[in-house]
Length: 110
Image 1 (cartoon, one colour):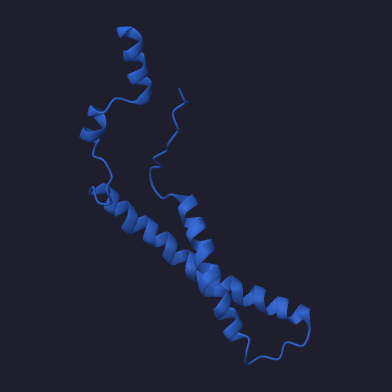
Image 2 (image 1 turned 135 degrees about the vertical axis):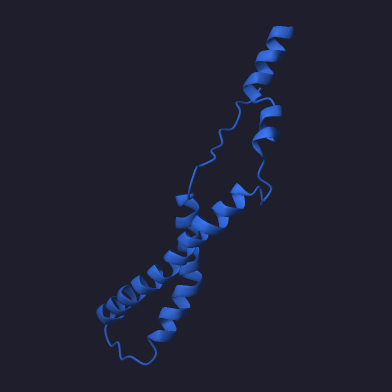
C-alpha cells in the first residue's frame, strides 16, 4: 500500500504561492514592460542594457509583489475564513477519518 501523501494547510499567507505568482507575473508583465520602456533610451552597450533592466525590473517587481501579497493577505485569507473556495469546514474534516486512522481500524478488525 502506498504511503499517504503529506499535505499542509498553512495558517496565514502562503508565501510559496506569493513568490511563485510574483515570479510568473513579473516575467509575463514585466519583461514586455521593461522592453517597451527601453525604447526611448539609447543603450549602446550590454552593460547599459543590463543596468537599465535591473533598475526598471526591480521597480516592476516591487509594483507586482506588493499587490500579490496584499491579495493573498486580504482576499485569499478572508475567503478561506468564510468557507469560500471549496475549503472544508472543521465539522467536515472531523467526520472523515485520516488515512492513518483507516489503516489502524483495518488492522484491528483483522
